[in-house]
Image (cartoon, rainbow, N blue to C red; front, side, top):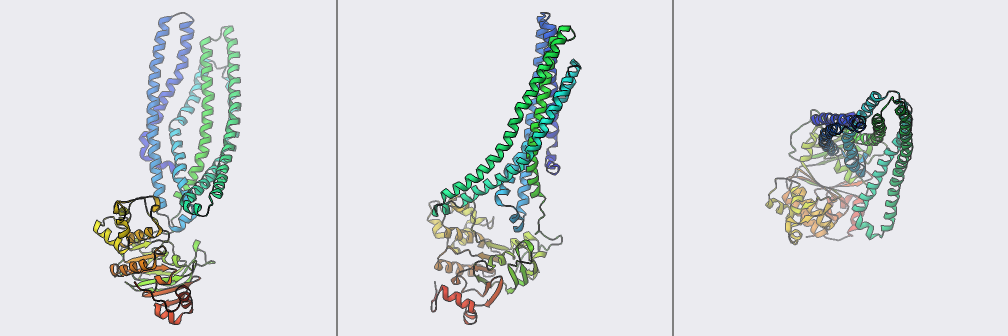
Length: 578
């Protein structure tokens, strides 16, 4: 929690001003019952109207000063808390942006969204309460006791009984509630996960008529959150009648014993009224403190979750003596590479991978699902680090190259096509922000996207929905290809990026790539043999090992696995041409 509060330091002036203004408001509030007692005892009892008016005007003036302090505190605390939340949210977002793929794997997407939104909002509210209510309640509690003692020290013995009773009730409630709040955030994660999956897969749900099943799944997650929330709320609701009972008994006791002192002439009526007023403020401030502590316990769970993100060690980052020389040739070499997710050596996904990809050549990687094709190409931009061996780019170990420098020299079309909300032009320019309109059109033509883009009424200015929902799978893939090739990087990785494109269009794309990216090393990950036949080198992957390497003609003559794939997909004697 203390570490997170460091994000409040830039706004320390506002954070200091808020308690000062609140102190002014509390002092004004505490002075009012004393003035009221004076009006009753010296004005009403003696029928002194001028005194009543003078004291009433003084109370009004003090009330205005207190209002100015309260409003000023609200403004200062709100500004400080909002700036704190924005600063913290920005820091967490930047931290997530620097995560490696394995770091992201540690946290679910829905959990990260909850931490960036709900959890930080909880902390933001805590700062607001700390600068306002958490200052007001203790000051009222302490100031109320001082003022009560100054009126009648003997009556304050009632507080000696009621305050410990209240503290025992509140301590029990807080202790029980703290455990619920941590579970509530976890249940909220689950609700967000179900919502996210349903929104992302809405078409699939409709296609398989699984709406009822998904409704039940959401209902289960939603009910789990509701039940744990009710447990926490019921605990607090049960506490309130007990607290009110203690308060009412205390007030009755003050009236009983105070009334006796009035009859004996040792205390005045106005003083009894003021004492009851102070006692009410003292006990209510104690309840407020307890509510704050309940919220603190919930915010502590949020602080732990946010801190967990900020404290995560980035396992893939640039070395202190990193090489900032930009990629030039795009030459890639794998030297006895072993890799397994989680860094373990028991379940290797890639086993002893070695090959050389000369500059300007097209390397195709073919294999069954789960053979390690995508994993292999993900090691080139260093999304993961090898367990053993080396991945070399431009004759340099990728671990020795600055991450930003390495990745700026690599263009990728991922297996899962992701487009961003905005225009088609914006999405293609996302690959290179200074690209001209002519370059965008040229990239779209090479990706075979220009024709369908121009069929839209707004052409390249057509607005795309989230993840490009208003485009077909093949259209999204072609825009993603245009986005990658406009970067014209030394290395281009196409990870099964034409799976939704027909064979003829795919061949045209590959032909355009060879001309436009003639100096770049191109990696094509595919399952269709028609996608890799024209490659300069084909790697056959099976269970994480290279089972064949060569051109289409060489493998067709000598590699039984390639022959089986060829015959199963195309059959003998099939010729594919554009």
